[in-house]
Image (tube, rainbow, N blue to C red; front, side):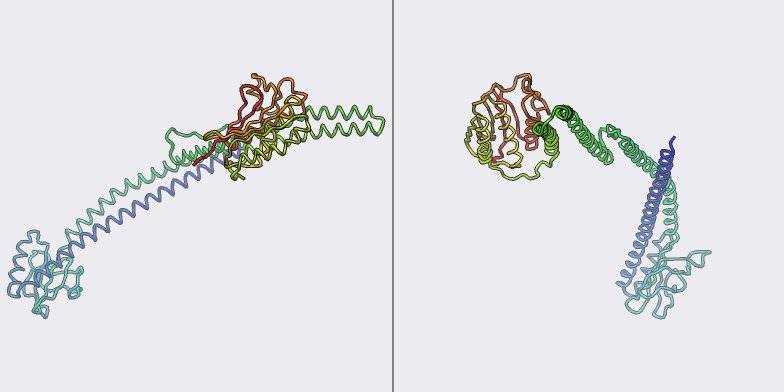
Length: 457
């Protein structure tokens, strides 16, 4: 195994171990915090119930007449079958008059509440006990001590503590196992991304991440990564394709250029001969440059942002402007350019690109139409669509070539010697696709139409 791969696996295991420990510690801390919260809630809740009961005793005895308090105290103690209550009534100087404790406990402020040691008088063999108690000053100057033995409460809290401890140990094990599982799963997912990135770096652009039928969050991320890689692969393929196209299409002009230069250098004997050779050479160079410029222009349009440079364009005005611009060109070639505009419509589009598309269509019609004929540029609006049509009086494209006419560098039979790059209709198709327009050839004749959907909302 290469050193880099071994190092990556060691780093992956170390990261996995750290992640597992971190997640396990996080879950363990969470378990401890929950257990502590439950224990504090149970203790404070029980203590709150005790304090409420003690306050009730003070309120009840304060409502009684002094002569009836002793009888009520004895009645309350008789009802205490568990013998966990402490009640005592003392005079203003603190001497106990009635009750089951010998003296009032110290450490509790008057009308206050707290935990103190008491001296029971009715529990054989027990000279002291710990109770939660309250001292209340009653009307008439007497003092009431009411308390509840904490033995049962402490025992209940110890049971809660043991329960929480027994529950915490399995929870800790589950936390460790859960942390290990989550870290291992995350490690596998990250490892898949790492392996994919290495494969992409090596040039294997067709590699993709696995995506489940019902993906989770990471699966959705993988799907987005795959879509991004699809787009990257497409772009790389297109870059390679345009490079291959340029190389292939420039081979013939450059070969012809070299042969021409070599021949003219051998045959030229006068200044005029060299001038003619230079003019022919420049024509071949211009042809090669036109091919490169057209390919790059198509590539630029195909990868342009959808709405970059879009404005509201008056289609009728655009057709009229382009027609008037190319009318002299058609006239110079011995043809007539007729313009017919029926209706008006405006769409969101790039005016310059649409003008470039119409220019290419008119240029083709002028170039391939019969001498002395008429080229018709028309614009019509019908319902929810507008149509721009360029037609000449020629026979048009043969049915066998209609599917291929929009391919780059395709030249129909019999037209190979006509000057041009073979990229005009490809450029028009790229502009139409960018706008979402429909480019079509008529079934008869040589008409080429661009159908523009209209937004009437």
